[in-house]
Structures are given as structure tokens and as C-alpha cells.
Length: 420
Image 1 (cartoon, rainbow, N blue to C red):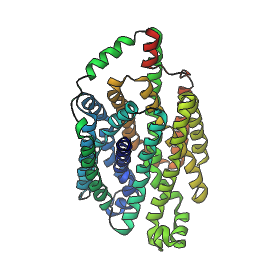
Image 2 (image 1 turned 135 degrees about the vertical axis):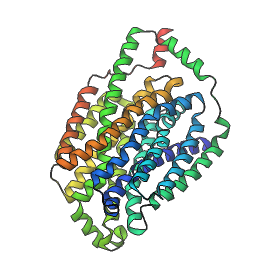
Image 3 (image 1 turned 90 degrees about the vertical axis):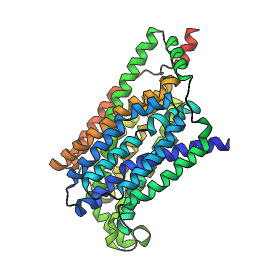
Image 4 (image 1 turned 120 degrees about the vertical axis):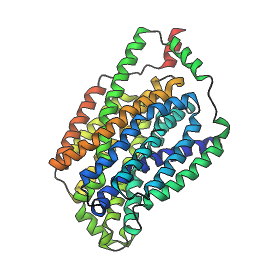
């Protein structure tokens, strides 16, 4: 049992590291690189875009290799590979070098979601809560990217924000390898299990429901990914613009938050972003519990409604009120994360699960990558208020799409029982 808890903990730490590495650059670009390298924020975003394409595109081969070889083996590759690459980024001297490093980070980061989530949904029961708990760790990685980078910008260098987590990730990779060494082997039974599952899926009604759910899952995955990227990547810049008054007051007011000087505003911005991300991540635990009790349809519609309301309310707000409303739309943005993973975990057969998660994250992270230049274009021409309106419309589209989900998801187990 203790070994099992350690296994789940290491998978959760992997999710934390995955999102940490992919979003460190968001804070670094927003707070320091635009000055250090003399480039505008919109120009710097362009160097992160290939990394998010890699994050999506390489999810499918990562899932395929994991199903054919070893899921635990791929997790070791993830930890060690992304750690070494992060350390290399810490020594980058040009925007092109850091862009290439972010692309390689995206390649290794692509491993986690199809592989880690396949392990979580296959090995343990209470799928909704397990995915939600795992998702909270991922969100804390998002939050810590802003916190760690902001702190190190003020007290050391943005380079250490890559080097220190890189060293930790490599150590985690070897620890994971020691824990799961006996399981890192070729899974010879996977093709057989896949064929047996296909034979069970014979009902025309089942196939129709499965197609309907799949279309909704992949459509809402794409749209919700744009919302997630726009909120998580842009939040440090949003706070840099909207919370300057509050950040300056806090910097002067407390030694605990910012070291007692107004020169540490970047630390305050990073800390506020961390607090919002961390508190909003609690929404995933609530959503996970509700998914196990009520299913995805009602829960998804509620989350989409929350996003519409708070995105529209954010227009023109600054300082304390803006911070409160930002927390509201981040609750919605984070709350939506486990829902599609829950639906895939319930409807996909175990033998193909990692590959199906791979397809899901190809869609998701391709949308993430496309949304980066979109965010830059909207910000440069109209500012963040226009972006909030667009995100509210996107959330409304999700509401409409999920309203046609069936009340009960089609599952391979239920179909197998019906066929007997």
C-alpha cells in the first residue's frame, strides 16, 4: 500500500514538473526578457509557439510507444529528458537558442499526459477523484512557474528558474526508475486485449453514442485548450498590467512577500499569480467529486457558465477587484481540465487508452500552440479586454456543445455486459 501511494505521488510530481517547465517562459518573457533582450512581449511569444506544437504533436507517438513498450519506461524518459533540456535552456544566449530549447522541452513534456493519465485511469478506481488530484498537482506546477521565476528574477537570475528544477527532475527520473524497474518491459498482451475489446463493441447504439461523445470530447478539448492557454500563459502579463498599484503597495508593506523593497514587484506579481493558480486548482477536486456523482454533462455546463460570467466581468478592472475576478475565471479554467480526461478514461478501452489520450493531447496542445500567436495578435491590437470577450464566447460555445452529451457515458464494460 505504501509503495502504491509512492507510485501515485511520483506520477503527481511528474504532472507538476510537466506544467512547470512549459510555463516558466511565460513569466520570464513577461517580466524580464523583454527588457534584457530588447524584444516586445508579442515577439517573445513567437519563440514559445514551436514548443507547444511539439507538446501536442509528440503526444501521439509517446502514447503509441508507451502501449507497445512500457508506460513506466516512458515516464523515466520524461523526467530525465525534460530535466536535461531545462538545464540547457538555462545557458541560452539568444532568443533562437531558447526557442529551440523550448521545442525540445515540448517533445519531452508531450510524454506525460498520454502516459501518466493512462496509468492513473487504468490502475486505480474512483477515476474522477484520481484525475482531479493529479490535475491539482499539474495546476500547482503552473502556479509555481510564476512564483519560482518571479522570485529568482528578483534574487538571482531567470536562468536558475530552469536549472534548479532541471536538476530535481533528473533526480526524480532515477528515483522513479528504482521504484518501477521490474515493470519497465514490453507489454506483449496489449495487441490481444485490443482485439478482444473490438469484438465486444458490436452494438450499433453503442457505436453511435461513442461517436457522439468522441466528437464532443475532441471539439471541447480544442476550445477549452484555447481558454486554458490564454488564461495561464497570459496571467502574469495581465497581472503586470492590471495589478501594478496593488503589487507596489504590497511590496512596500511587507518584508515577507517581497523582501521589503519596491524593487521586488516581480516577486509580488509571481506570488499573486501563484496564489490564484493554487486556490483555483481546488476546483478540480470539487469537479472530480462531482463527476463521480453526477457525470460530465451537468458539471461541464456549470463550469462553462462560471467562465462566461467572470470573463465578461473582467472588463477594465484593476488591482483588488481584478484579482478577485481573475480568481473566478481561473476556477472555471482549471475546473474544466479533468472533465475530458474523465470521459476518455470511462469510454476508451484499456489496451488503447494511452494512444487515445495521445490523440486527445495532440488536439489539445496543437490548440495551445495556435492560441499563442492569437493571444499576441489580440493583445497587440486591442488589449486584454477584447481577449476576455472572445474567451467568454468560447466558453458559451462549450456550454452549447456539452448540452447534447448523453446523461450516461457509453463504456466498454457496460457494452460487454449487455452483449453477454
